[in-house]
Length: 307
Image (cartoon, rainbow, N blue to C red; front, side):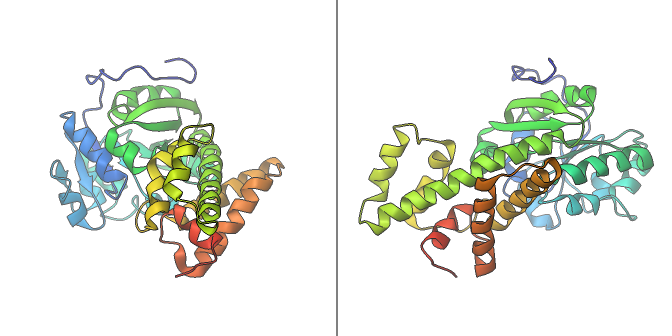
């Protein structure tokens, strides 16, 4: 592994940690779990709604986080407070690790969280409990998760991340280490600047097409054939054609990410006018009651539609 790029190990399965659990079998966690299990790796699963964990169709389903305590615990949850809540109590991970005799567990945070907050959380977890935290947010959406071609951006001790690469590559096509805890989440913020802006730009383009009587599908075919093409258009384009915005990556989570970007801008003294404008648009969308829709539903906000 070089200082950053750690790709090119797609066929190396022998280095996968022997004790792995995944907590959070939602839209992203479920396909990640299926890819891990498909590689023949034993996996313990936990989800607040147990039926979703059982629906994976493999692995051992734990009743509590304590029962799911493993040497490596992957969390695929919306934000850091949900991860922190897994630790304390008799049913928590700390009790589970102690009961299992796991002295130096690794806790991987795959959700998108505040870089500042996760750096503090990692330091506290290490100093108080001996838990190594790796922040490893993901890009690629549910389709990328299903196809095993996510991009994983990792922050944490380099040797720890190195040991996790064979596991990450069961569901990722790109894995890059960027530095200590918090670095991965900062890269994810960079990613979300581009994603949120692209989603909003495409929504505006589709609004213009619709308002002027153009065929959105034909317009998209032109965009896809030129410089305006993107993974967002490939994965999400049909939503604007069908007007179907249920499910997917929610607008409220997109706004959460944009708030993290605003936090970074404030800390660094940067002025990010595009991100600020996009953030304002998503604030309008969420306040209008559309926060649970896919972020492509910003199209409704552009057109002045609400729930």
